[in-house]
Length: 150
Ligand code: ZN
Image (cartoon, rainbow, N blue to C red):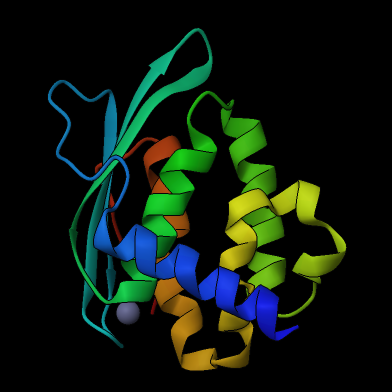
């Protein structure tokens, strides 16, 4: 088990150090802002849609290592998916973060997102990890709204 935890930790550190898709997007179709007042995490998610799929997704903002790594892994996981697929993944992630879904038991469903499974042991961090997903959902549902996880 400790091997898996080490691997997860490495993934989080890596995504925190060099976050993927970390930039403001020019000409985004949709965007939304999210804010987690408990920790001070602030994020904006930008989307470009094409033919019913999320053609491009980027994020920008500031926050703790968990929120940043989570957003980074999310963008890498969501690119090329339809909003419905993204929504399903959000469900899985939410279940994983609340301990309802065992990430080790369903690695193919979660992929790299499983790196955040340890967060369910730290309830105060769940909002950090889910912030980017709530913000993505707001963006998909029309955007421009300010989301607060409170
Ligand atoms: Zn945080």
